[in-house]
Length: 248
Image (cartoon, rainbow, N blue to C red; front, side):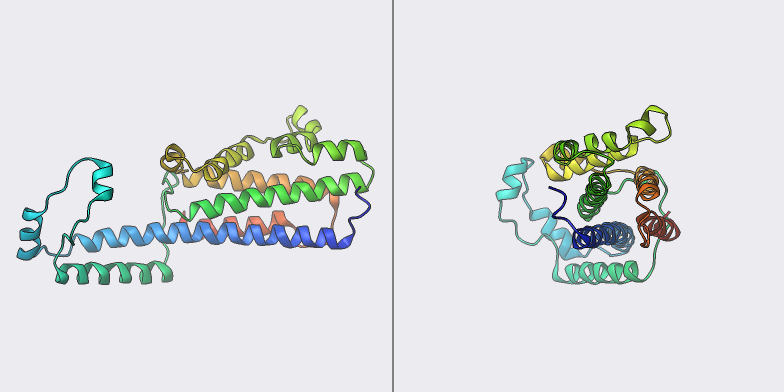
């Protein structure tokens, strides 16, 4: 079954992995840029003076406390045109600043921006793609049988990783705790329930730990494969360093 896969298969898997890696870090940069813009915007809002017309509108505004009632209500604009214009200008300026500059966030900062969904999904796809490529390598180099390959290649991702690294895990030479956390977080994006939407806010320190363990996992795969390519462990290391230089 593995005989039908030639150099083109490896090339397509490498292209896919490259795409997922690039996209995952594009989204995490966008997430932090979005949160930087929100911080700037909040400070600008505090500097916008409330007008007499705003106060008059607020005094006449009737809003209930029921969530569904609020969602279904047709509320007129609660602010004056002048204030809305100032708010719009502040938001535009905050986004322009965030696109041209960066800000250092604390390691315990919780990331809440919606772009986080793109980061976690693509990072998970990256790991799965490289694991799938490695399993193909193992069966084509006769390190595992066709029967083993047919069973393990359709297993859950953590089962595939445990299969690949069973000896290293038994000898405590490698750990998968952060990879487990990655797929736990990604499951929250795949099953974007009301509870998961609220719970999905990992700290920067958690993501960095996940990235570093991904790098170690890739290094272990590369030691066995010895492919003549710019390694994915080096690529993700570059992205980690770039992120830390910009945001943490």
